[in-house]
Length: 231
Ligand code: C5P
Image (tube, rainbow, N blue to C red; front, top):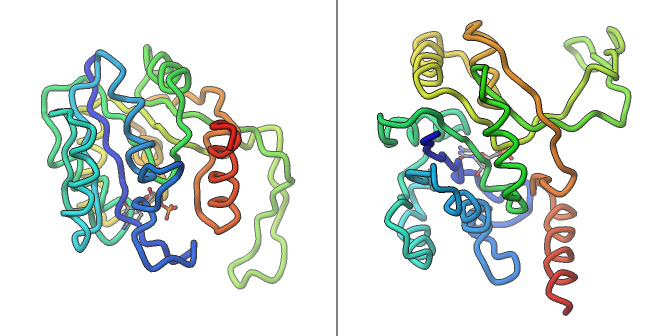
């Protein structure tokens, strides 16, 4: 299967308490977005990796990306929301692939086996994503956020991770419908679900593939890399 990878990397470092773009923060001496992008390049079916970066830091992202010395990697300006960044990367991507894989720059511990399992999950359906069963019981709260409406059945709830793989023609259709309706979601397969464009398979996610959002997440990431390098 020929696929293009879209890496939304245009988020700020606000929730991390950082003034620099989150995806430029180095983990083990390497910018977070490069760590998130590199494993995909090892797959023969990967025809390109399009990175959506904050417009103000475009040249810095490009300088980092050049270290990969791989013509399949491109940096483009992202948008004001994650969905807008994905939309722009989708626009900039080649129209000749079978599938699109969207992966958050903020998940730098992605493994080859997780990518392989998401790709395999796509074999007979519209989209596929890694999910982790929830440990906590989840309460749905009424609008004002003060009272519980009801409790959701935990055995059917999963935390969605990336990479999310979606058949190319369906993803393009879903994005154009969402653009028209101004409908937004916080992940990619939600567009396929919302427009009833076919089955979305969930494959086992990985605790290691966590998203770096808070200063604690960043510390955990730095520790993991330090332990792995024995320092
Ligand atoms: O903010 P959140 O953690 O959900 O962001 C997930 C991913 O989306 C991150 O990799 C971030 O860089 C990216 N993003 C983006 N454009 C935005 C906001 C977030 O590419 N405007």
